[in-house]
Figure 1 (cartoon, one colour):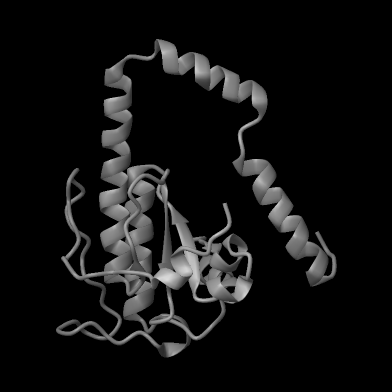
Figure 2 (cartoon, one colour):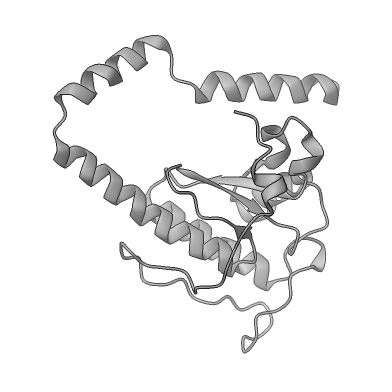
Length: 191
């Protein structure tokens, strides 16, 4: 679509809310499924999402994104300011174009958009292979200097080399490094 930026910004937000929310008939179907699907289905679903969570979060951390691991969501809000001086819109576009990994700009989740200018959101409701590839690409991006040269080369690695991702196993944990988004940013998100 070709339109002035102030219009396309509003159109993108409406599109996001229309495509992310479930229509009423689907909600009724899910309500019925909640009553008939057994506990094993939900245990398996939770385990599969935990595996995806445990793959993506450490990869983001190793690539230089600061994040607080979500406790129940299928997405994670990350701070990319250690990687780039760009704002969230530009960083998300550049990451999609240069790396092939497309986050959602963080400013769209805040009543005051400036509060999200150094944040992007990644979803992990993807195939394991897709998440593994995304992690590898993000590590290469960070090792190559990230956006605008802010990322420092990883100690002990040749320039441009990426640290390996851990084995893809459920329950894999990150390197233990703390990763927290300042409370003033994480609590001001819109519902």
